[in-house]
Length: 123
Image (cartoon, rainbow, N blue to C red; front, side, top):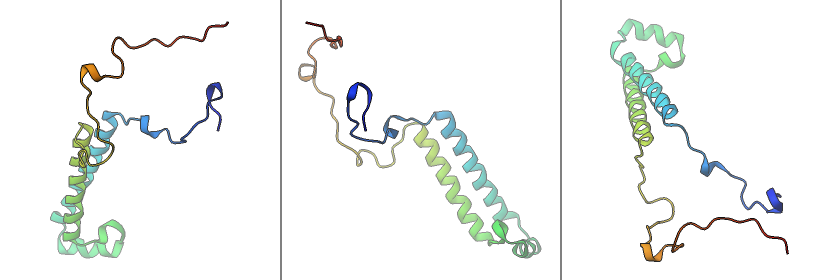
């Protein structure tokens, strides 16, 4: 695949430079936590008569009380984890990806200022 200036692309995935906005991650996390709270509410407030009627209806409501509590807790934990990751927490730490170190000032790739890119001159 040819790119700009006749350069050849070596990879087709550009997702590494894409960042999800923090406000979007926090909004999704809020919805996940609210849904988890709703599932916990279902697990705590259903009476036996309501539970039997819900099982006849099927779907989400056909699950038992304990299962609603379990899934609600999982959703709340996922929402809390997503919120923490939006603020920079990395659950796997430095175990994924290459190790990086900040070089000392005298070992940096450029000794002085950052070089300015120049257009080639015609001879």
